Image (cartoon, rainbow over all chains, first blue to last red; front, top):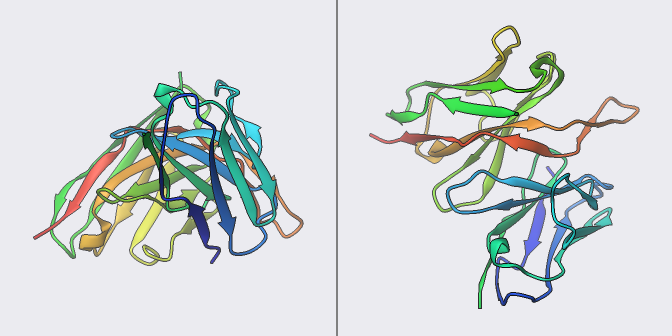
Amino acid sequence: DIQMTQSPSSLSASVGDRVTITCRASQNIGKYLNWYQQKPGKAPRLLIFAASTLQIGVPSRFSGSGSGTDFTFTISSLQPEDFATYYCQQNYRTFGQGTKVDIK
Amino acid sequence: QVQLVESGGGVVQPGRSLRLSCAASGFTFSNFGIHWVRQAPGKGLEWVSIVWFDGSRRYYADSVKGRFTVSRDNSRNTVFLQMNSLRAEDTGVYYCARDSGGDYDSSNNYYSLGSDYWGQGTLVTVSS
């Protein structure tokens, strides 16, 4: 089975900060890496699919890059509504452990 | 608008069974695969199962293989998750989610482009 290692597990940041999360796959997964946002008590929301394609309706401050085994998710300028937990997912299976983004 | 509504959760004793339902509306249900994803209290997301748009393929996480069975009724726009031999570690919120589509390779392996719509979740508690 493919393992996904996401880091960091948590981070503290301020509004306006640039935030970067990484996800590493245990083997080559090509471009098939998705990113989700989840807020407490809510279902996950798809932000980015195929490593770098923004889902419809998602603000352009969110971006993703990478291929093969190493992937990066970036929020260019953190907004108050972005404080949440973020997950990567390879294909439709394994999720990363999650990264909780909270207020510094 | 696209809507997915889970039901059937509750409190059940270890070793017993439970059947979850996911009722869909607002899209052509028979064109889309559906996933089940769960989340234990305070923990991360865990993919559980997928059923193909036509029910022809079904896959499971190793943690539930042999105990859970996914099925769908396209005439009722509903997906089911039959959960048998439940364990304490099956406790959590169960979400159904629509697969947005994807690609196939030359070996007919499927590569998803994510789950674009999710239900609100239903809580399953396995406890004596």
